[in-house]
Image 1 (spheres, rainbow, N blue to C red):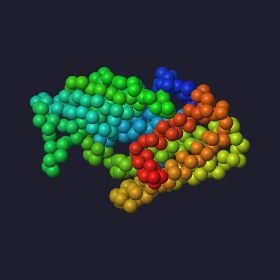
Image 2: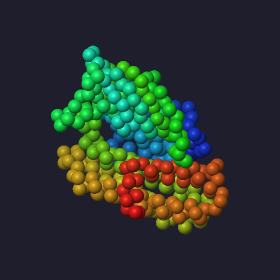
Image 3: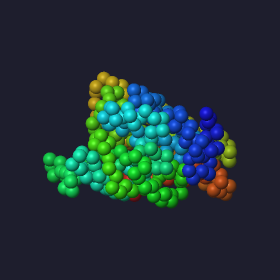
Image 4: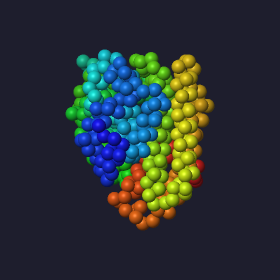
Length: 341
């Protein structure tokens, strides 16, 4: 087993996650924190899972981000027919990941299989996945399938990695070891039970009822806080700790707020009380406020660190680049931009 310090050392300056670290991840089943225990996963409650994500992001931004998004994709185990899910997740090496965009087509054949083609972008963890998930427009023997209102039918599909071509085109300044690449599928034949629908579930646990936007918001937020905590720890090597205390305390308070929301959400759902739109918007706004505080704090500290902190072999430089790459994620970026205009 690797401890936190060994993991951080292994990730420093890395442009890919090493085989040793990936093996550790698989053996600990970290990618299956949201997979139900009866499928072989850890079946974490929401609060516990969020704490794991925070801790991993605090170790290293790329590590935390890859684990968050790939474990998040494995969350879809609940959307897959049970027998298929049990078969897929019987292996500790099962790891989903992919793209939320609609990037291709799935043509249903006469035998019920689907012929999938297309190009998708920004699949985090691409080199480490066993299966890719993607959204595609559905056709039936060449003709588009339409909803009752005339719109195109979109379904999500699971594609084994041996039918996928990875395009290593990540060029951003941070998150370099996440393996966030595009991928292409050509003439892949997919079984009928390898597709799923987001709001169709085959398990009964409370976590399935959390609106996906909230699930995404809170899992990303704990990543930002973990990276910010790591940044402030590294900054203490350059600045007096007293100058960072307020920022570090603010990160802990923000994390406590997120965990409180997680407990509230699961409590409501365990009593079959639906999540109101008002609460959903409140939590999203909380996330916006957290980022509105973190971004200037990290910038203000960074410009006090001196030229050494800008050197690419310094851990704090990597954390800085990771944080400002991750915060460009669309979940919060658009709102932040509008508020500053």
